[in-house]
Amino acid sequence: MIEFRSVGKTFDDGTVAVRDFSLILPSHSTTVLLGSSGSGKTTLLRMINRMVDPTSGSVLIDGADIAGRRPVELRRSIGYVMQNSGLLPHRTVLDNVATVPVLRGVRKRDARARALELLDTVGLDRALADRYPSQLSGGQQQRVGVARGLAADPNILLMDEPFGAVDPLVRAELQQELLRLQGELGKTVVFVTHDVDEAFLLADQVVIMREGGEVAQRGTPAEILAGPADDFVAGFIGADRGNRRLHVREVNGARVVVDAQGRPAGVLEP
Ligand SMILES: Nc1ncnc2c1ncn2[C@@H]1O[C@H](COP(=O)(O)OP(=O)(O)OP(=O)(O)O)[C@@H](O)[C@H]1O
Figure 1 (cartoon, helix red, strand yellow):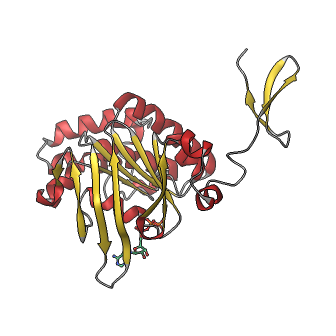
Figure 2 (tube, helix red, strand yellow):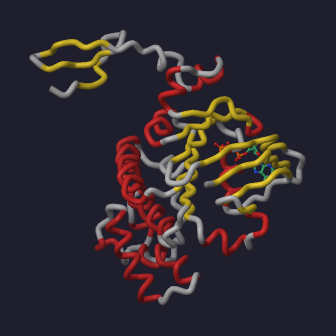
């Protein structure tokens, strides 16, 4: 479990990124921080592995304040996946994945064997292991990024807009892949995005943020859809989303679900 306790962050230049943020992120579930640019999502995410330290309040992992942990050691024990994958351009795919375990003292041979397994895990062909990042598609690079995030077998996986830079089809594929992986691995995932559909698809818990790291609403996707806390939330999640009344219509013997405008939303199982 991760806990933010009245956390604030004012940067050296006086920018108040987060005023007073409290949240519990249960273990083995996915929490999505959703909000527009500048609402403090990345700042909060980076507090979990001490890339950023709060100026007030504290962050706890399993009840222990991480202010007492050595940042480098903490960072190596937590997976971190970012937009544009953050891969090292002059290292092969395999070495990119194996880097952190080697830094933690795993023998190179063992780290590479494990890295090959991780390529399977994230759905990448092992034949890509010796390529350099520039020789991969954007979607493949993101998969390598996820494999690298998982390499140290962390309990916590931080993902900062990991699928922001790929086209919509590949993005949908990566989202499904993450759902599958999460079903198997059950990590404590903290995911930052400003894409509402992505947030609702992936999250167990959604936290809608507004400027200054203020929580506009927190809940399951269903709770937020069913009862947006205010106009800001309603506007953010799309005004028509909550009251998109769905109907069932018969089409060629199949039961098709359509919305108020008659747009098909899906097919009911027979
Ligand atoms: N190192 C820094 N020094 C000064 N201000 C910063 C620094 N890092 C972030 N900020 C400011 O803090 C605020 C929150 O930034 P943050 O990156 O956490 O937002 P975000 O919600 O992740 O936005 P985005 O979706 O654009 O990534 C912004 O106003 C930003 O300009």
